[in-house]
Image (cartoon, rainbow, N blue to C red; front, side, top):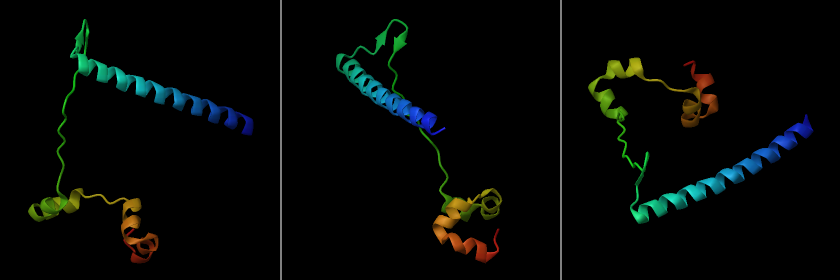
Length: 95
């Protein structure tokens, strides 16, 4: 099994290097396309879109709809332990 793990590790390392080279080539090609202004060729087109994402501001949501906030809110154990410390959750009986 160790030999197989070693072989896989080397394969993944080589694949990462290949991906890095391909990403660099991709970026160079995009820069060339932008410089030449040729963003369209036959069935291909370079499209740059700005995506907007909405998000909730937790404090404001809680002030406006506290019952809904308490109903919908989720706190993960990982986040709670990161905020409070690992031993706090076990001692507090909130689980």
